[in-house]
Amino acid sequence: MAGPGADASVTGVLTGVTAASARNAWAVGYTSTQVVIGHWNGSRWRFTVTQRPRAFSQLHSVSATSAWGVWTVGSIGGSPAPLTERLAGASWQRVPAPNPNGDTSIGAVEAVTARDAWAVGGTPTWTVVLHWNGRSWKRFASPSPSSSGSYLNGAAATSPDNAWAVGSSGNRTLILHWGGIKWRQSASPGLAGAPVLNGVAATSGRNAWAVGGTQDSGKTVILHWNGSSWRHITSPSPAGYSTLNAVAVTSGRDAWAVGYASGKTLILHWNGSSWRRVPSPSPAGYSTLSGVTATSASDAWAVGYAGSNTLILHWNGRRWSRA
Image (tube, rainbow, N blue to C red; front, top):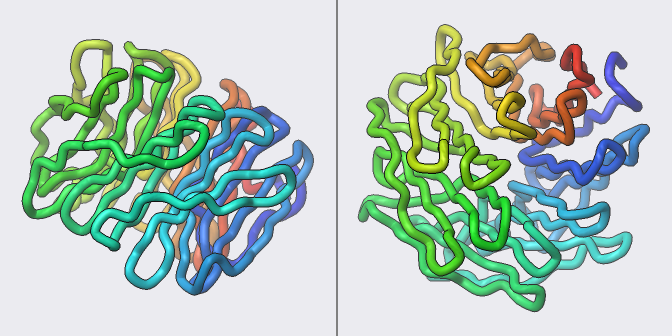
């Protein structure tokens, strides 16, 4: 293959990826009946496909604070219930989590330290925010502005008193901020087309990005936090239907956003002044990217699926290639 290591493709969908270093990364997802977890050891990806805790369980997100400090979250099949697991030595350990209304799905996790992690998602009606304090998951109150439904898709944190969660409420974007005391709704630009935010990433209290798309018109959406307000930033939207699912940022001059455009992979790069599309492999058939992570300007991973198989792409500082 063109990328590092052996072909990492297995049957299923990859939804999230995280990297503790250039030699330690994790990717998660699911098949129609099982969950998928992959590990990058610096030379190749190795995958396990397992049943847990029952059929139709899904993993949606993964976050690492160190080589072995890793969380993954998702939902248990049937009437959704939170699925949260942490890496304990060489195996994954399921950790119980609150299930408001008996119908909760967790869409994203962001770990700050071993004793500080956030998991966000929702029920069919309201947002759900859970916090890990080193011993257990506890639910925190979180705004749900619309009676027609509010949900959180992405989370980011830079410190114990600075975290973001993004999603949608009704037909508007939803951005919540944690300042160390409580979660509050943050004002976001009014956009037409029923916009949804799918991912968020931050490097500091003055630099954060949120990405998504408009459901009605199929245009990409990118918002930037400059320390005082969120602003809508122009972003490429290829002809047809486009959306962005995830974002990663390493500095004020280096950020990646991934998704799809009319059934092909879509990768955008921020160079400090503008977002530009970067060529990316799109295997035959429908291809999409759901997650992205970066450890430096010359090392990034993007994951998703192509047809019925998982898809992993790697950035080496010059181009994206299949792993």
